[in-house]
Length: 106
Image 1 (spheres, helix red, strand yellow):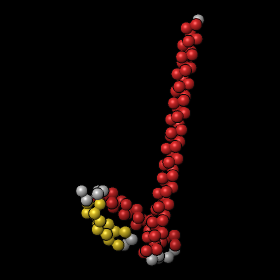
Image 2 (cartoon, helix red, strand yellow):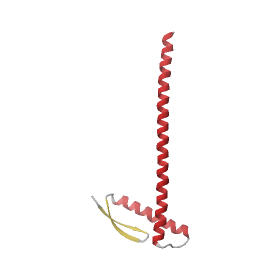
Image 3 (tube, helix red, strand yellow):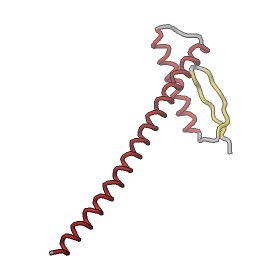
Image 4 (cartoon, rainbow, N blue to C red):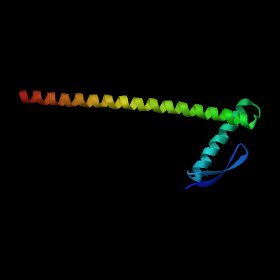
């Protein structure tokens, strides 16, 4: 089901059809609007809308790629930790068997 949502980004109103809920679409629009405002503040002058949109899109894409890389690094670290944990569990199990074996020899 498509939801009809009206948003405002950088002073322009857009009517969108989106499968996501209205609140989510408005959050996304507010994020883009904020990023576009920050871009102009950083430039110290009013940019042409197209220039601002392209620079903002590049910054958002940069954020996405960096966050994706961080996510991949975290998944890799988790995988390594799980492998280490499995190895330690195996060693613990072997140590328990050895302790039991030694106790039985007494």
